[in-house]
Length: 132
Image (spheres, rainbow, N blue to C red):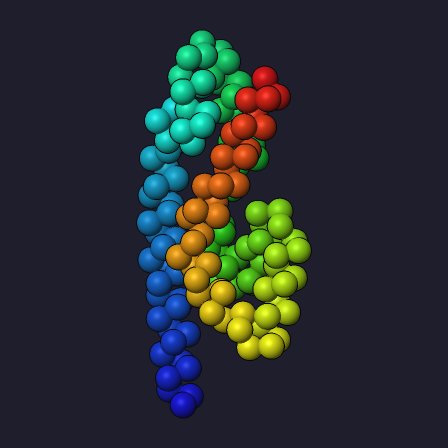
């Protein structure tokens, strides 16, 4: 039984490290790229002049969340919902861990993490547009 638990933990760590490396490469490719913005704001930013785009990207980069940091929070601290400014969800996750079903939610969130980040960053991009 202990061996199975150790294997599961090692697989989770290995998968998280693999996802972190992938996420880092993806984030490096999307720096200040209009094509990599959420579609709901990308077309608006593409029509801006260079100075407005620079101001937008400055504001957006300040507040957007990193997938690498999200996976680190998922793996080591289980505080990734706090990272995405959803403290209530994180507290509910911890409570479900205590009753024995949080582990399933935690594993599902491993695969949902890119969409959680994308949704959060889309809100950040919309807010950055409103700020300008």
